[in-house]
Structures are given as C-alpha cells and as structure tokens.
Length: 310
Image 1 (spheres, rainbow, N blue to C red):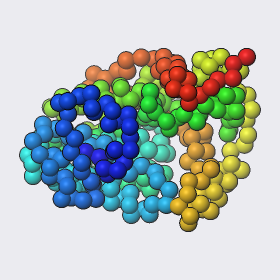
Image 2: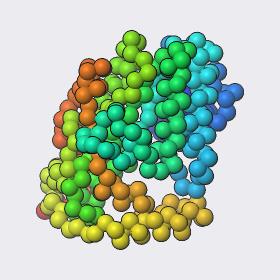
Image 3: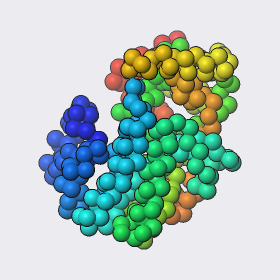
Image 4: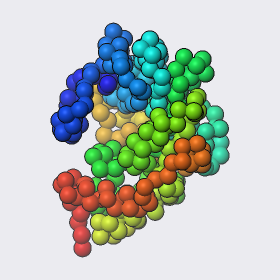
C-alpha cells in the first residue's frame, strides 16, 4: 500500500520490479481515504507501515499530521478490524533531533526539529498506544540515514565530490550515520518475525557513525579525485537557506537552498545500535565504506556522477 496511486506508478524501478514477481498482488490505498484501507489490509499476516508524507514544497503543516499521524491511526484501526496480528511501523531518527547524549539511543526524549518530524512523533505515540492496548502487536523502527543503490537523496553529495565542486559548510567534524536500505529491509523482517516482542522502539543503523569528513574522504578516494578542503562558515548559509524557503513557499517551488540541507553539515547523527543487536540480533551485512564504494560505482554506472579524475 502506498500514499497515492500516482506516486506509486511514477516510480519506474518499483513497477518494473513488481512485474518480475508474478506472485505479488498490488493494492492501492490512501492514508487520507480510510475507505481504501480495508482492502489493503484484508487477509494479510502482517503490515509494514512505511507509507508517509516526507518533505514536499508548499504543503501545509496539517497535511503531514493528517498523513503521518492520523493515517497511522486509521491504518491500525483497519488492521484491527481485519484481525491483522502484527504491524511494524517505520518512524525516523529525526524524532530526536537534539539528543541529550551521544551516541543517541531509544531513551532520549522526543525533540522534533520540523513539522515532518513532529508528525512522526505523533505517529509513534499513536502506534505505541495501540500496541500497549494489546489489540494489535508490533514495534516502531527508527532508521538512520537511508542509502543504497537506487537512492537519490545523497546523489548531490556524491556528485559534488566526484565532480570536484564540493564545499564544506562548517568544519566537517559532525557525525553521520547511515543504514543500507537492504539492511533496513532485513531489520523489518526480523522485527516482524520476533512475534514475542511488542511495544518496543528500536534504532536501526549501520556499522558505526563517522565524521562527515571521513565519509567525504572515502567518496573522493572511490572516485579518484582530490579530497575537498574548502570550508565556509555555517551561520550565513543557514540564514540564506531560511530566506530562500520563505521566498519560495508562496510560489510552491523548491528553494535552491534549504535550511535542512545546511543542517546536514551541523547536526549530530550518532546512534547506538545495541538494542537492535540484543532484541533482533541485527547486524549490517557490510562495512560502511563497502556500502559507500558500491554506491559510488552505481551512481557512476548509471551516469549520475561523472568523476573528474586526474
């Protein structure tokens, strides 16, 4: 089930993949249309709730709360009516955007940094209340920064480094923590199969956190280009990003610079994976540098990055 049929069928790699599996049945549901949810949850042994509104230009705050929070409530209510025994809900590490300690773990208090993250906090609370009531069992998973082949969110970072146009905002000493999408899928399956576990929140992240400059250096090494050195101060770019968002919002266009893109350079993303290891016996299949190397090669093979090698 997906947020909308239009978004689903505009993802060619998804539909192409489905066509290769004749045993898959596609049912279109919409979290804003509860009447579509019954058919989506009927006759299933479990639900992976991944559908969500992420960050879209020009959408009011109410849209995120309707899709992410109330949509979760409607889906779980439909699942209970259909006697679905288990649901694994996908949240985000961003529900704790200001951790009180590092590495951050599941004991940190909620501290969302924007409306998307606030709506996911609501969704978590709704799901955990349902699980506590015992009408349906399940868990909440909080992924770290997701990447892997077919990912485009980090394409700009790889492209700028490979084409020698990358510039640091800040000193590059903040941590980033990734999770390969295939490892994340494995974690969801583990969470579904551990039927004895109910009502838990678990962070899912890769090998370990790295300083941003370590990641940049590895990408440069993979593309055989010089390691970027240029750094610019954070505050002026944050102000510029905020102004761009304010100017572009009334016109419903994507600003060239987001405050959030600047935050990528200054936020700490450093997570403990101990709970995932203990409860789910989860561990990543590869090291982070192996994953980065694979993604570098995939971007280049697909023509998205054209490294300017010496």
